[in-house]
Structures are given as C-alpha cells and as structure tokens.
Image (tube, rainbow, N blue to C red; front, top):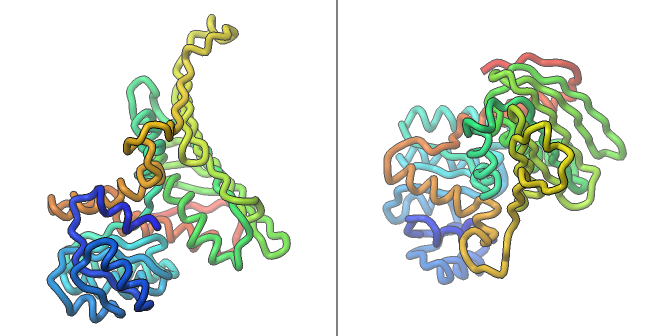
Amino acid sequence: MNLYPALQFAPIELVAVCDLDAERRERLRRRFGAEAAFDTVDALLAGPPLDALIVCGPPELHQDAAVKALDRGLHVLVEKPPATDLAGALAIQEAARRNSRHCMVGFMKRFASRYQQAHEISRSRVFGRLTHLTVKYAHWNVPDLSWMLTYMSVHAFDLIRFFAGDLARITVEHLEIGGQHSYACTAVAKSGAMVSLNTSSQEPRVKESVELVGEGELVLVRNVIELEYHRRVSPTRLFHSDLHDVQLLRPDFAIPNPDQNTLYLQGYAGELIEFANACLENRAPSVTIDDGVAAMRLVNLFASGQTGTFHLEE
C-alpha cells in the first residue's frame, strides 16, 4: 500500500520482487515494472545483480533477510521493528559493520512532512534550545504487550530520539486493564531537554501528537498532518486577539502536488528518497540500524514490566 507506490519518487530501479503468494508477487512485478519475481529471500539474492534490498514483513523475516542481504554485500532498508527483540537488532547491526554496508530502519515518521518541518523549526536560532518535548501515541487494542511495543510504540520511542536526542534517564509508570496497556513516562535527554511520553492501547484509532517547546516558542503536530507554530510574542501583546504569532499548516487536498500527497505526509516517499540517495552517495542514511537498536533498547525496557526510574546507557 505504501512502499511500492512510493518507489516512483526515489531514484530507484525495481529489479525484482519477492512474495510468498504467487498471484500477489506476479501482480506486483507487472504493476511496478520489476524484471523478476521470487518466492524466497534466498532465491531473490541468488537472482539478478542487486545494489540494495528493501525488507518488509514480520519481524522474524526482517532479521533473517537483512543479515543475508548484508552478508551478500547489499545495502538494506528494513522496516520497523528491525527484529523481534534487541538481540536480533544487534545481530543486524553487527552484520552491517562486518560487511561495511549501510542498514536503514524504516522509521518513516522522521520523514513525514510536518515532522520534518517541526524538526527544522526546533533547530532554528529563534526557537532556541529545546526545553520540553511531549509525545502522545495511543491506539486500538492489541493482541499482547509485545505487539504493542514492537509494532506501534516503537514509533514514539524513535520520535523522541529524533527530536530530543539520546535519553539520560527515564521514569516509567505502567497500567494494565483487560490485557491492554498504558504508560506514562517522563525522561531527561542528554541535552537537558525534558520529555513526556504517553502511549496506550486503550483508544480508538491512532491518536498521535508531538509538541516541542523552545525558549518562548512552541510547535505542535497533530495526527501527522497538521502543524501549529506559535512564535515568540511580546508580553504586551499576549492578550491581543490578532494571533499574528500563530501559523497553521494543514493539507490542501484541492492542490495536487507532493505537499498534499499522503506518501509524503506519512513519510514513505521521504524515507525511500533518503535511502536511495545514501546508497548512491555511499554514505550512511540519516537513520540507521544504530537508531533501530536504540529504539529496541526502549522496547526491551518497557517489555520488562519494571517501573521506576532508569539510567540509560549507550
């Protein structure tokens, strides 16, 4: 639904597709113009010459296919989560280092248009130093805690690091009702920024928001697509109603350009463009397996069931 259609925006030639379902892989081959189709990763890697592999499937496949491709000398873009657990993510990290290949993890939210804009604003001189980051990522009921953390909350863990950098310590509170889980967390980033995180599997649909506070400025992204920017304002104007300091950005779907395209708004186009350019320029992508390992460390901590304050190490 997302990765194949987003290929058109990146400097990528689709050489081969791989899928267990014969009808689906042939449909994908025809629709997106691949030369060949395979039913196993081993057959794919033994097929036509490749520069890179994109892996999207269950986490067990992510680790197995990524390591095999890296050992074949290919660059890899592996969907999140990179593996079922921290050990698997570390195995991919080691394979990338062993073969001097790049492995990017598909944290597409980093490339979502509004998050990119919020990140740029938060790095500006006028915004000042990031003082507080608040992230809410809540969603529908899930089968179990592992599913919640590895498939869903891992997005929130990565967004925290994207905006605030590595964490120095975190305090975790946990509530379980009816087999569903809620977490309320506070943390301090190594930069000194304060972080608040609320993630839950007790809400309908996905409810997502990110709020960044600087030194007198604020930027808020609601549900990925709407950005609200409050500029610094003089105290003498705080009670005026003109709101000249507030800017609101949201999609205008009446205008058919990339800014309104959901593949850009969600980040799929941006992540594929970054991956392709990193391969072509022989550089590390802006998000790597190291970021995947860091996110899985947080998954590991939350899955442990422990509450309280924890000091985090590299």
